[in-house]
Image (tube, rainbow over all chains, first blue to last red; front, side, top):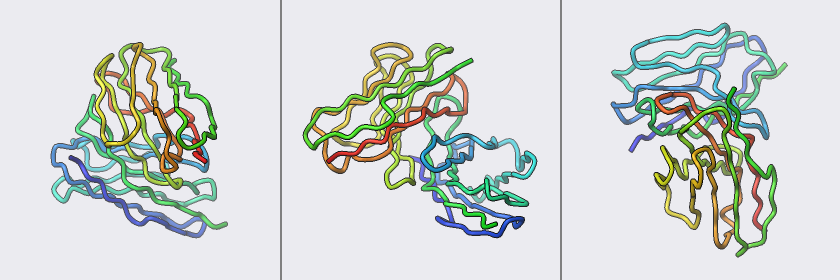
Length: 112
Length: 112
């Protein structure tokens, strides 16, 4: 089955700096890669996703890149703000009607 | 619009007692349904997923079971809880043929 590795497990940055979280996956059939943000005690919520026919996707301060050959994808957050502090999860699946396999999460702390 | 309801929000149960967590989705038909467990506030472990009534797949052998008595209702059960069953349980759904998973608010279970 699919295995998703996520690094780093914790990340601390100063407000205004950029943050990068990286994930690798094992199943070459995976073609959908979402990123979820989970604030303390709350449900995970989708912040951005990418499909395998696209190499990069941006939404304001966040962007995701995908390298299918190397089987890795990354989340980039620019101009970080304290409200970006949360646990971020990457995930992978083979697409619609397939289960999502999650990474173990990255605790991002943005220091004012 | 679609909504997902999960209850209870918190639960404290003694070891050896039974468990029943309920999840319902409104505003859609024939959703894919999922149960995840999150231990120690981090990784999301898929426990069960269902692509239709009476179609439930178990991901991890354990003393938990899942049932889908109605199209939009997903129940997580146990006959006898273990201390190791403590955690944050999240129900999620996705549209048939869709990609994104939407999470319920979660149930924090403490087995004492």
